Image (cartoon, rainbow, N blue to C red; front, side, top):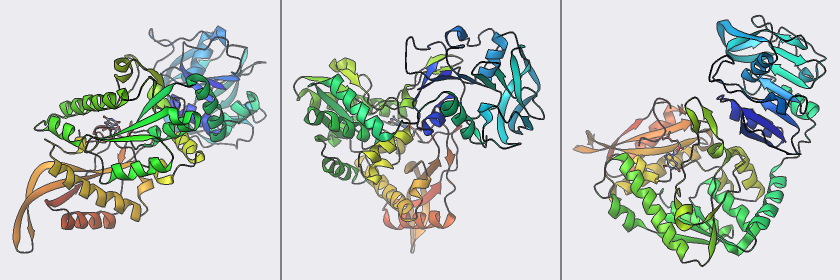
Amino acid sequence: KIIILDFGSQTTQLIGRRVRELDTYCEILPYNKFPEDDQNIKGVILSGSPFSVYDKDAFKADLGRIWGKYPILGICYGAQFMAYSNGGKVEPAGSREYGRAHLSSFSKENKLFRGIKENTQVWMSHGDTITSIPSNFKIIASTDEVKIAAYQVESENIWGVQFHPEVYHTEEGTQLLRNFVVEICGCKQDWSPSSFIETTVAQLREQLKDDKVILALSGGVDSSVAAVLLNKAIGKNLTCIFVDHGMLRKNEFENVMRDYEHLGLNVIGVNAHDKFFGELAGVTEPERKRKIIGKGFIDVFDEEARKIKDVKWLAQGTIYPDCIESLSITGTVIKSHHNVGGLPEKMNLKLCEPLRLLFKDEVRRVGRELGMMEHLITRHPFPGPGLAVRILGDITPEKVSILQNADDIFIRGLREWGLYDKVWQAGVVLLPVQSVGVMGDERTYERAVALRAVTSTDAMTADWAKLPYDFLAKISNEIINKVKGVNRVVYDISSKPPATIEWE
Ligand code: XMP
């Protein structure tokens, strides 16, 4: 495997994804947490960083632990840091360099550049530049602007590149990473969904033995794949609980329950509409709504789980981006928005997270390999609190029903027009606004809804989807004609940031 040491760059995860795309297993670790005694490490990649090497607070790794022991590839800050630590010079670049550049000269015989064409486009993003390198480093590539665009340490398997091979705009970035990972480090490219399933099932059997495990299903791809994997490993010892808080999509509960049963999962479906609608009555403040739903969910889950004797484990569909310790300038932040947060402590359960090392696209590949239905695998993300965060103002069963009908028209339309898989996520928002309209000879005074559809790769940033006007016209027409109580449809054209995907 490859270890990627993270110095806080925004593209560190992308490096991980690119290495995985080469069917090679890798782990992203904080710059100062290189593992002790791991026989499986074949090479190390050092990421970029928001810092300058000469900043007082810059992240400094102990290179002694890896230098000469493993092949190393330093990217941007990683390259600057290796040069600087060995007596080279790094200075603010005359002009900050962002965007495309071309490798106007590079040594073609160098192993790192094997198969790369002349003048290839690379992507730069740096404020500092390496102005001199130690005498045992040799320059192996330059651009018109940057003399030291790449170097190799003589007679060592150590390289530094100033540009970013992991970003898509570096045309032959994949080839360069392949040269490093496969040719130089000797990784066998044997990481595949089926090998993952085989090893994970074996590990789960070993870890869980005859223990009982519970898992909260949400209908989403992560928890579903985790459940099917666990079912394969421990069968009847896994009990899944699917809570219907009343704010799921139209017919979602029934459809998903049917899918789960078809997959052979042992699922308990709980209808808790009354509890949630009761507790939410009259509540308008978004965070209050979330808290009520979060706590209600835990209560229901806890109550159901206690009916099963001797449960020892709580399984979750946590995936890699949720667990990577992302280094930020303000300290270590671990992102976590699990809807069952607080449960393991409350119920005294151990946590089992079989997908914690996978990226989303890998979870999907594993799901396919497990024979799951395509519509379960490609389903859009859907927030835990459901339609509650898409009804602005207080929540009533009547509003949920209006929203479910409008949402159903939008989502079915996206599927019919072949647009569903082109957007990351889509839904309808019920606005606390009424406006005047005219239907036939009648004046109407009814609700407005907003359509929301975004493109994204990880939900951290998103852009509004450029859906065809004809499609929007058809959906608007259909919603206004068929959904009683709605006489106006608008389209949300905000990106994230500064807006968010959900309205609440
Ligand atoms: P925002 O609105 O923050 O959403 O741009 C980013 C992604 O997260 C989803 N989301 C949630 N998912 N529980 C969840 O499981 C939540 O409380 C929650 N809030 C937002 C949202 O749908 C989008 O995919």
